[in-house]
Length: 212
Ligand code: ADP
Ligand code: MG
Ligand code: MG
Image (tube, rainbow, N blue to C red):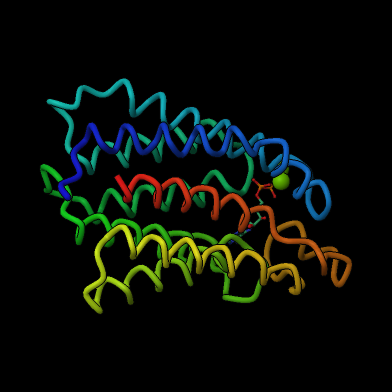
């Protein structure tokens, strides 16, 4: 498919709606091993991003600018760790979309992979440190592996979602190497990471978008 600025505006609405529905649940997850604000932070960030992106004139705005505007709005709206992490992710997606008037499936997958890369570089988390990266990295890898073996875009995102879900579930057995939960040692075992849980929600919205 060809993904235009208009499509990306719709994508940011899908993400914001999905996060809004799970806002309280994400706060509960963060309440168990953090400071309880993750749902509020992600909801504020995603609403701000969707609103800012929605105000752009699609006839005048290239995909790269959509991601950059989303990054800025997200960062400005969020005072928690997730702010700079997702702002960087969206910036990197914007860089991957640079100079394109519309995105091909290949461009869109590159933008998705760039989000995981941005989170990695910004947060410096390794796999197994009980963060959103434990959902993002396997998800981006699954999407890319599927794409390279000739799988259609929608099915690549089925694989990406499945991998994100498994990565998120696996955080339950981990102690944390980054973020607030890293101060709590073994007490955090048995709880999934809130950032990994919100990553699954975002990736599910992206997957839904890719099915259309
Ligand atoms: P805060 O801890 O500042 O309140 P949030 O509640 O919004 O921030 O986000 C917490 C989530 O951020 C964690 O569950 C974890 O997934 C993620 N996180 C924290 N630090 C890092 C990091 N260095 N790299 C990747 N993800 C991180
Ligand atoms: Mg928090
Ligand atoms: Mg906080």
